[in-house]
Image 1 (cartoon, rainbow over the protein chains, first blue to last red):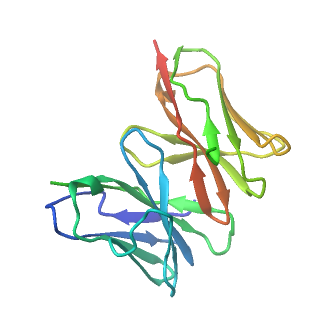
Image 2: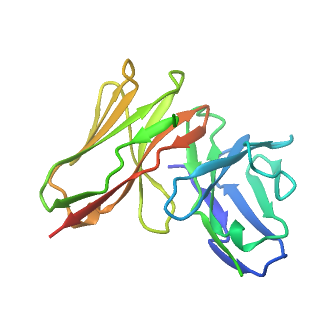
Length: 116
Length: 108
């Protein structure tokens, strides 16, 4: 099946610093990628839809200036958590939609962010 | 009302039991349906797709009823390794909406 690589898998950072998470589709082109987060004991919630070459679409309640998304190529989207705070500690996961298979989306391995 | 609703669980069953999970979705335009499995603190992994004609994979059977907007997952002969959280996922144009998940614990 299609492979989506997400990096890093785990990161600990200090409060106030920024963290960048990468999501790569390794064997297919992805014009659209999605970013989700999961707080403890909760389900995954869509944060934003990342479109190659254009601005991301953010879900209600997600601060676009805090969670910067860049989708500069058909195989890479990045999520930068700026000025991270402890409440941003969460499990972040991306999925990439295969352009050739309009309904399929494949998930990365996820990134566990801990802000101390 | 949530877009995707699942049995609240948790389900605690003995090995060898048969267990069924249910899920309903509100968006009638939804295109694709899946069951994912998520182990503690790990990424969700695709268990199986769900079709109107039914989909069986070994001990797992998934069913979709579009008219009732209802999805089910049946696990037969439960194993200890089946213990996990099962997520009902409804996808539209690649965008996935997750249920809250149902936790299954299979005990010896």
